[in-house]
Length: 167
Ligand SMILES: Cc1cc2nc3c(=O)[nH]c(=O)nc-3n(C[C@H](O)[C@H](O)[C@H](O)COP(=O)(O)O)c2cc1C
Image (cartoon, rainbow, N blue to C red; front, side):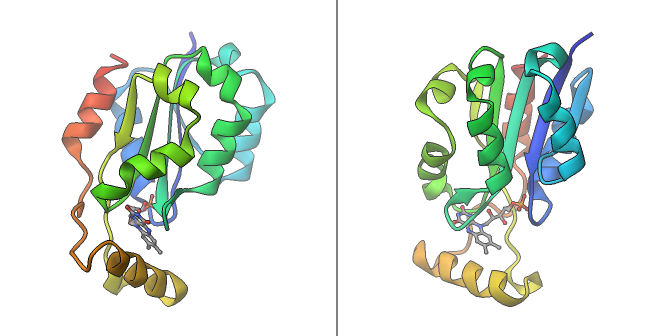
């Protein structure tokens, strides 16, 4: 029996947590960390259709861009993903930037054919960050209007909506 691929890349754990929640409720899901070289290599070995009946791909956002490994995977597997039932998610904090981030993440053909495309919410605790991440997070926060991040948690409703497309 083929699995549902749930693949993510995450810097501070939110996309990982969302992908884990998705995989936990879908029958026969295979969870893959795209930033983990060994599991990405395993997924890359065979055509997606040989192992998977559907694909859910996501990643955390930094400075207006989805995680590089998520983008790389989507670009490398574009043709295969076009013919699989698929969904794409980000985890981020600023709702007003979602459309722009997704526009850069997904070719129009994948966006149009996807069963779900959107944000699953996110978390940004600036005080827990260190070094460059802290500086950049403050700058990004300021650039979007010195307002508090609107997403401060994962959006369970959005996760349910995504999952429902595959049940
Ligand atoms: C350095 C930094 C830059 C960020 N840039 C953005 C951004 O441009 N837009 C946005 O919506 N969220 C931004 N965020 C918030 C993250 O997307 C949010 O923390 C998300 O939950 C991260 O997902 P992850 O935990 O899977 O890495 C940023 C966070 C950090 C730490």
